[in-house]
Every structure is written in structure tokens, then in C-alpha cells.
Amino acid sequence: MNVGKTLFAQIMEFVPWTSFTRIVQRYGGDSGVRTLSCAEQFRAMAFAQLTWRESLRDIEASLLANASKLYAMGFRSAVKRSTLADANESRDWRIWSELAALLIRRARKLYAGDALDSGLDNTVYALDSSTVDLCLSLFEWAPFRSTKAAIKLHTLLDLRGAIPAFIHISDGKLHDVNVLDMLSFEAGAFYVMDRGYVDFARLYALHQAGAFFVTRAKSPMDARRVYSAAADRATGVICDQRVMLGGHYSAKKYPEHLRRIRFKDPESGKTLVFLTNNTMLAPLTIAALYKNRWQVELFFKWIKQHLRIKKFLGNSENAVKTQIWCAIATYVLIAIVKKELQLDASLYTSCLQILSVSVFEKTQISCALQPDDSQSNTQP
Image (cartoon, rainbow, N blue to C red; front, side, top):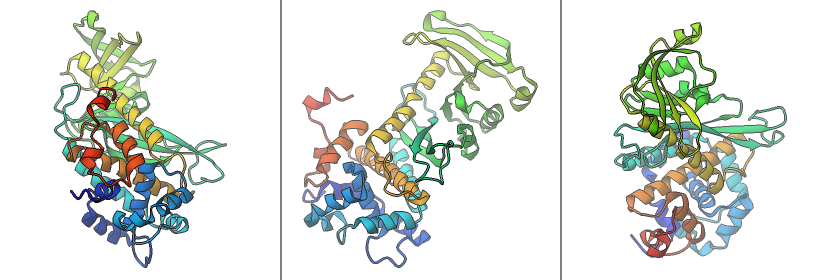
């Protein structure tokens, strides 16, 4: 790789520009455009994410301060804040959604061989949502409560590589469980989710698709015990049962046996009740699968802390979705770079922290993002 290129230019080489051009043509993104093409728009938005720019003026000033490097970074001319604002408002957000989907498919192939903590060969997904509060007077299109607006990021995270396999952006009123209707369930895969997704009709549809779910039971739960397997209480497993739902409507929605595992977490001391349709795995493996759900919460925490989605560069629905999808595409792009170059640096800390202060540096990316021995001992 050419060491004379900036780190930013080297990262942009991992974007599949030929496929991106076809996406832009499909939506007419560059139709009648004289300045700031869609490719330049993505570069500007990715730059904002990588360097933590929080306003259009901030983006404009930062790029202008390095005007001599702009052409090598892929910009034909200086980026004006008014031009970038107009582009975010007018260009279809689905361009960036499809770019993110393209990068996600590539990233999932790269991380497919990674081992899971549970030791399973099956694909394991964690499903959850996160709410981003907004000002109701500025974002009227995203109603949530009487006094404020909000959007929700519904995410299905592939635990191999922490890559989002599915993302849906909705207003704050959409209940989490409705997202199950939008998913195409993968036979043999595990879907780990919290109690907010317990809807027996939808879980039965997942079961009939040949997939497995792991979730927590709501309290109280009307169910009768059919069979109890032997449980080793020393491991924290209080009971491992097969149950039938007792309520008339619940039993009609899920007419088969469910597996109920009562487990006392040795770390917190809390007693957790898991529900699953998998009858083969050991109860401790089921508990470990649910524990891995924290990765999707870590993903949301990291997205909010490190990517610029808490302060938006526009107020319209199109501008907000454009910014979110560009942020997600940037996140997945860095995950691709990390895997392609076989870097040991942490995606959540080292990679983006280093890039945030060195995107204009002219050094080989594999050297810039590779922590030295003294740093590697302190990485989380």
C-alpha cells in the first residue's frame, strides 16, 4: 500500500466503489450534481465520524484547515457546510442504507470463522433496541411521548465480530416485539433477546422456521410443568423443566413444550428464568448464551459514545437516517479494515481512537493501528 497516502485515503480504499456507483445510479443520487458527489458526501460523513466532528461548521473548518490534502482524500473541491446540508436533506437515505448492507455482508463473511465464547458452531444473534431522545419541536416526524421525540435503533447483532446483521430505524413509539415480524429467521441460528420480545405467537413462528431462541420469562408466567431433568445445583442450575403454557390464548399461540431453566447467577446472586425451544444444549450453555447478549448493549453504548448520532447535522427524517446509516457504514468499514489487515487492536477502543487524531497522517495503516507491546497489555 502506498505509504504516501493519508490514513483516511487508505481506509477509503476498502469501500467497494464500483458497487457503490451502481447503488447511486439506482437512486439517481448524482443526477444534476455539480459539486459534492455521493462519493464525496460519504467521505465527508465518514470523516465526521472518524474525527468526532459534531456540526456542519466543524466539518467544513476541519477539512479547510487541511486543504492541501483534500484532493488526495477524494475531494475535488472544498466541502461547504450548506452543500453538505442540502445533500443530507435531499439525497435518498436508502443509498447509505444499501452501502451499509453491502459492507455488512462483506464483514460477516470475514468474521464467519471466528469462534464464539459458547463454543457453538451455530450463528448466534443478539436482538435489542436503543432509544435516542430528540427535541419534539425540531423532530416532529419522530413522535415518542407528549413532551419529546425519539428514534429507535432496532439491531440484530451477529456475535461473531459484533457485526449488525439487521438494523431498523423507527420512531420511539414502535414496540420492540414488532421487529420480529421484519426478520427472516435463519434455520439453526440462535436468537438471544430480553423479556421485551416475549410474544408467544411470534416465538412460535421463529420455532417453526427451525431457529432457536433464548429469552427470559416474564413474571408471573402461567405454565405447568410436564417434565423435570436432573439439575446440578452446585453449578447454579436450580431446575431444568419442560413446560406447557397454561393460559388459553397463550397455549393456542405456542402449542408445544417450552424449556424453562431457573438459574442463580453466582456473580450477581440473582435468580434468572430462561425460556428456550432448544432441548439439546446444557443449561449452563443456555445461560452463557444469554449472558453474551451484553454485546449488543455494548454495541449501542459504543455507537452513542463514539459515533456522531447524538447531535444531528439536519432535522428532517432523511438527514437523520442518512447520518445514522453513514455512521453504521463507517463502523463496519473499520471492522473490515481490522480483519483484512489482521490487526490485534481493539475495534471499540484503539482503532477509532487512533484514527480520530491521525486521519491526515501519511503512514501505513497497518503500522498506525497496530498497538505496541507496552499498550497491548493495557487494552480491554
